[in-house]
Length: 129
Image (cartoon, rainbow, N blue to C red; front, side, top):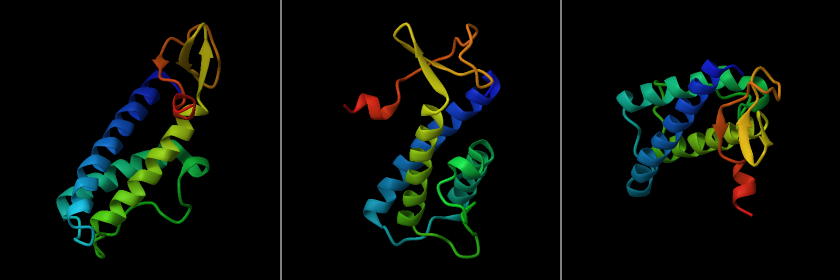
């Protein structure tokens, strides 16, 4: 990944987390209610951008790309899918970072270079231990 792609990725992760928080709250109140068209447009846009970055290797489900607007999904369905994307985003991030001198850094263009100056958090699985 280059610096611009890292910026896009980090923005998408923030969007996924925000969507999950907002729709998760709706899913707790009314899990079977359909997500409205306005929100679904933004969910699908975010998921499609994730699919482009993740490629086949990191996409959560081979046969899922976006929600159909013809068959409106429920709040709980959308929350479920977004949570899968959040987990895959963390796997993607974990596979593209490394540790040097106590700091976690992004690999730039797949390399552990001296030019890798974009700091990030440690992999989430390490934080939980």
